[in-house]
Image 1 (cartoon, rainbow, N blue to C red):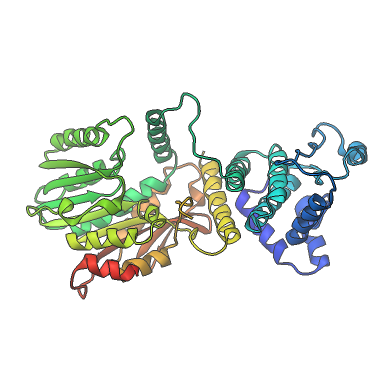
Image 2 (image 1 turned 120 degrees about the horizontal axis):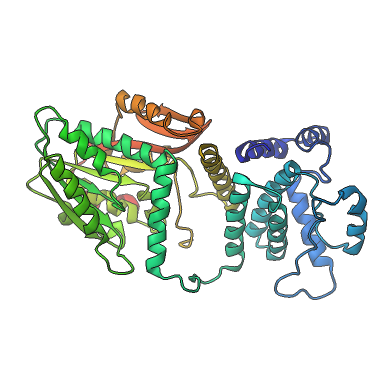
Length: 464
């Protein structure tokens, strides 16, 4: 079976084709002459579904009944298709001939459902979600996982259920599970290691020659990024600097001192490699709640601010990102390291955002398989948009050195499926992707020499 990203590329070609001849040729190639509908005409498909749903004189229940499932794959479909169709004229046509065809139709159904949601055609959207569930049963691997998550997201968009937790699932259990999943993701794929390594390399170069340094980490979590930096500083010619680390994290559901526990473990490591180490854990419900005086330390010579997959969470709140960047400027760091998803999930229509997200996460899941309103809070933006935002906030880019590029490329050899990963240099930044699709980007910044005046006021003005 072709991987998910390839299917999406094929789908785009099919959707962009304007002639029936081209459609027939492409469909024949993709599904071995077994596709029973025009795969490029999603708009007509949705219109037909709407017509069928609205033409029935019988009042519909709040949720339409699920159409009959397709015959089991073990039964020869050619012997039973007509009998099945006769039993239910109004059922949406689902004829699963093989896994490849079902995969193509599954992608079409996802796109059609997104279109129906955008048009607020909830009856059609509900019917399509059920079709997606049926089609997804024939899939495996990345395709099944991606479709399952997107079907769940579409269902939530249609019915907007109130947030709830499963029976017996406490906030503490949820936080513990998040930590376990974060650790597993760190160990099983190169993305977090790449992010930490490239950011650390930029920080290490910025701290060259400094005797007292301070790192502010916007997302401390388990502190996985910092042992490598401590060890690199310990090996520095002339001896390591005095190192202060401020780790920022959200309140814990069980009111535990998780941040302090991480600091204690790092202090133990620092002691074994003879580094003068000080640590402070800072609890903040949002990075926008931070003020410059919370981060300033008059006893340090150089400050680095580090953000790995944290800033995009501020995009849902107007002015929050500008407020945080103003606070960062007020601290006058020598270097600011930013790692974010190389994706554009913020802006445009719902269908455009859905399509971009489907492409992005399909590629991400393919790589993992190869290796082994305000409600919309995940608003990722691409590197070009982050460059513009950082520039408006008074920061200049700092090129990440060639050593980081070479060593990051070597890092990928440690992972299964490493041939599919790609490190690229892009205008002084480094991106890590799967085949031709960049997925995350690391950039480094310094306060612009021309940036003057009150940085908080300047950031607030930029937000207006």
